[in-house]
Image 1 (cartoon, protein in one colour):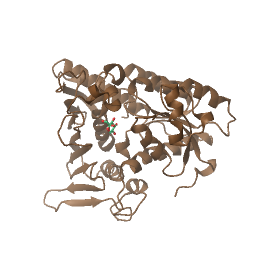
Image 2 (cartoon, helix red, strand yellow):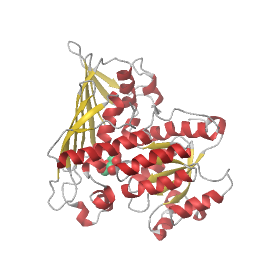
Image 3 (spheres, protein in one colour):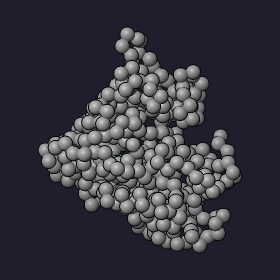
Image 4 (cartoon, protein in one colour):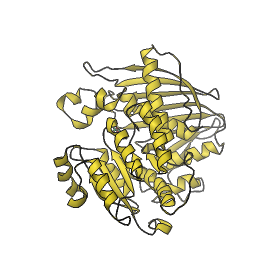
Length: 399
Ligand code: SOE
């Protein structure tokens, strides 16, 4: 088990925004954030409805005096607490259109922020948030949680170490079937806001899950994008936003990538998968079988890498993301917790007066968040221009 944050010698104090009754990802955040005993959930503004916000608190063991009716009330009252009691960070687990105002208010109050994806409602908000983060000096992480899987981190290190040679092609897919029908018309909360342009933003499927697939391709390969051609589609009659799409990406090194996302594929659950082709080898990974990664090289048997922190082939990046020995499956919660604990390292550094590299973080940061919003914007614009090639390299993205 981790020590309680080194020199800080105490648990970090967390506030959750969102996660009230009927929520999904809020509970995931609350579970992952405390998995390593480095943080405790002490406060929350769990719903935009003040009554529901307070009624949801017991489910998280949040005491009534820190179960707030609004984000502003939470910030005001937390700031009035003595420094050794107030929260250290705010987790934003709300629909997309509220990420920016909540994150901005928390950052300006001096709190660190862990924000769900996509980072904001549009690119303009994302670019402004970069400035707010810089001015605040706080830690900011975006929970592109698929970057937290041990074999994803092992593969990323293999690629950065040149084991696959030059990366020439990447195919990143995110295939679901849960919106095959108009679930949103049955008032299902998770479907309702994701399919509402006023809450989701310019894209539906491409905003909700293609952003994960694109972020994973960028995170694992390190390739710098040049431009994108995209076609989005709304198959379900009456739906306002895309529920399917393909994007083709040209990278600066001459490499080629594709991002495919679907919410309408019968029988598919949460099928994130990625295939990466290098000049010395190719890898394949699927989130629904996360403890196995396949490496292929012409003329060699196919190599099946299992998540084994004690295996000689497991590099330091993979090892650091493991909690259990081989054969004891680690998955969604542990990967989510890996994003949190990488962010905790920098939060502890900040709290003990240290400095850290704010751009090349292990966890997705505000610059990665901007890149995600630029991806959405350029894909929607390209699709509206019949698949026109549009620039995809953002000046604030990791280079
Ligand atoms: C629904 O598509 C969803 O909950 C996404 O919003 C999450 O980001 C993804 O991790 C799981 O599926």
